[in-house]
Amino acid sequence: MRKLLTVVFAATVALVVPALPASAAGIDWSPCSDGQNVECATVGLPVDWNQPDGAKVGIAINRLKAAKPAQRKGALLVNPGGPGGSGLSFVYSASAGNYFSQSILDSFDLIGFDPRGIGQSSEIQCDKAVLSQPVELIPTTKQQYSDLLAHNGAVAQDCAKHNAGLDSHVDTESVVRDMDGIRAALGEEQISFYGVSYGTQIGQQYAELFGSRLRALVLDSNMDHSVQSDGYLTAANKAFENSFTDFAAWCDRTTSCALHGQDVLALWDKLYAQASAGKLIDPGTGQVLPVEALRDNAFGAMYHPDGQWSGLAGRLATLAGTGAPAASAQAELIGNSYQAIWCSDWTWPEVGDFASLSKLRENVEALAPHTHFSGFFSDITNCLGWTGPVRNPQHRLHVTQAPPILMTNGVHDVATPYEWATNVAKQLPDTVLLTYDGTGHGDYGNSTCARDAIDTYLLTLARPAPGTHCAAEWPTGAAPRTAPHPVTRVY
Image 1: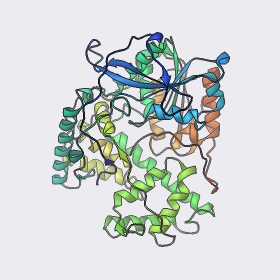
Image 2 (image 1 turned 120 degrees about the vertical axis):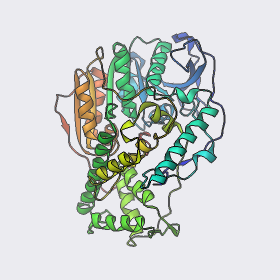
Image 3 (image 1 turned 90 degrees about the vertical axis):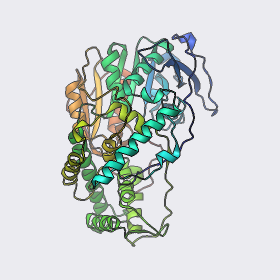
């Protein structure tokens, strides 16, 4: 499979700045350049937390003050996931009324930060020529497997040349220590935290290291940092297949769906076969549409049904020749933060040769007869041959001092499968898992019921009863909600 994302960088050195005093007075807030009612600052923290007096990295932070200071409940730190999502952008979106409820904005100083190696916190930068080499991320031959390992090794070595050592210190444990450094610099004894998607891994590990410094912890759509490759891809493939069959059922009962009245699964299977054979033409470009691009179209639409299912139906109708041609979306340009962070957090020794990877590929594809592979198969293969250190490998959580925790997860979440959440809930003390019985990723943005429960918990610390479920909310066919969702897991 070709890389699903276009990667473009300049080859420059990561920004290293002097440390700031870890006190409230040490943060030099100033208005952000975008003109919104948000303040910005930079906090200098150690590149290597084992060498606190060594080189520093500038962590960009921003703050939206509580709209009603008299009812302020403290600082709410947020992370939108990724890895690679910008906490700064998350707060900017919230300041425009596009995510959190007004009651949350009234009661908390909202604190965003770009984690180290991301965005304005010294984004990991590597040579475009090295990154853009084509490679099969789902190799089917030994040569493709060897080429993949060589490519990943070359990328790791190139990134090491351009980032002044930061690329070896972008693991989630380092980010968690940065977050506690931000807490100290804010002068807060305790913080509240809302993490969605990969942000839940940050929250989980913060609870593990600094649980007593948490007032409240919301984990929305959960990563499970204890699984190995088989458990990881089995859950991911099943989640994509189940989400897509939900989409097909929605089209069957929704007259506004562009594929209403058709056998959506059969139509998809035909398009998939054509794309696999190199015979599917995109009417918008006149070019052959690769199978991974077709699969990527569907996978991405599973994140937010309300805003994306209608568009996916129209796209598939166009490709099948039953709809009007539509302009193709341009590829998103991103940095290489994802690979550097991911391969610092995850290791896959059980697929250390072609035979093992092939067996895994065959096993997980059999679980998904229509969709075949999750977009996260590359989470395994991107790290094979990676030469950077794995500083934060998978482990079961050991949390002893955290407050009562609220978790939420959708039963058909394509990016963070429900079984990951149930497994994490077993690893955490005094945790309520609220189940959203629908499809989509990020329950605060997909479920009114989940949003209300999260708001109530953050404001009052009261949680729903164990075993509580929120009913599924399906697209109505009307215009989607205007509030954007945060950037969550990249695929």
